[in-house]
Image (cartoon, rainbow, N blue to C red):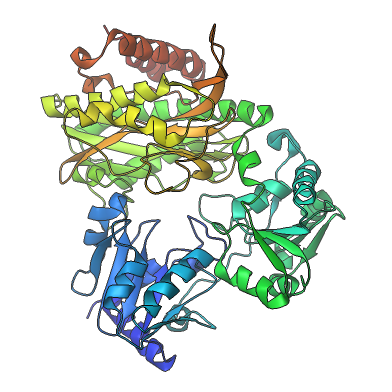
Length: 600
């Protein structure tokens, strides 16, 4: 019996003890985070799945794991199909699956601290149709059988200086207070970790690669706030920074504080607050007003200080990546490298800047067929040698005090030449990237309206990719940040219907993935900026490209590029050279001049 089969059996035994016929297991924590601390990696512990998005349902006789198109290949490689059914979302929702598979009269458990209120309502309706019941557990049954479950981090908070934030916490809290007053609200629950960090100008290290601290905030209409955080995590510097207007309270006081809101009007974000928060407020007699977290849009629209900081971070990060690309060009074709050693070398180039705080996510270092996994994560088991005459994809980024970076480059490892198919696919991805980089659009445009520009050249060849084209990026915060997003519109999918505004960061990352052979992605970060157009009727926007590192010309089929696309390539690489050349010397500088030479 495998380790994961034994864990599944142990959970089923625990469910019987708890008088449950099933249990739902998402990748989530109490803050609805995309990336969670080790203690909350319950799905990975149970199934072996290493992706960042997914859920599972365990019943007495069957079990299913739910993932989207990014993880179609990965889930089959990591999760045993003898024990788990593979279910694709959004084609089939958990509620739909429960409705079809749950026996009449069954009691299906869920942890209210890791699900949204909306999900609970949907699943309740689905189960009721089968004569079954959704039951909130008092304690998570996986925690009962996870013998060596890690504890929550006790790392200390750090002050995020105003010279990087561009606005004080007092000013941010005043803006939230003004919003509360205008909407006749007394307080709002801030439960998303990056929202807490942004509002209070603090950072942490409780989640790998994301500088946040496990905490909740109640922000009030008088400009004060209550911060619920473990006392040992707060040093004198943070206490002084927060001042008297931010009251420090323990995590154990959070639920009682919610239950003490009798008669108060409290705003809660249904997309970012777990069901347990709604339950505690309801039990306490508060009037709950569902509204988007008031920090979300101000956090997404970066001020001039944050924009300047990001440009500085991108300049040093681009030079570090360029040193890596030069090193790969010198060594990879000789053999002896693998995905893990390449990722480690790239990290060392970033560390050489002397300003790297952390990586912004686990580096996707993927060669050959591993590159066909959109969100591949290399480990000792999956690690492949980087072989000559292959495609290597590296998606990586750094966390710096002045900015968060995210960049993907796909390179050809010689000494031979790429196939005509490889060059065709790479160039179609490049054409999509350029189309988006050159986009000009009116005020009110949504990400879904721009997404087709990045896919059009691929579609013409009957090709596509199963991930979004662009995501928001934080300022020394989460590498994936809403509310904006560029992607296919699917029933109001989060972010794709958000109007783009000047000051928003986004990624531009079309791709192509051939299962079992290779993957291609080209990613730069961009800034939405206002465009002055003579005679324009209304406001128009475009993108300022922020990421500067050479794109591999070896994979380009120049005959497929238009004159405008060639001009973009040459202008972009001239700018790359102007930014990275002053930071390079010797062979790396000579390589940069060659890598950035014009295409014709």
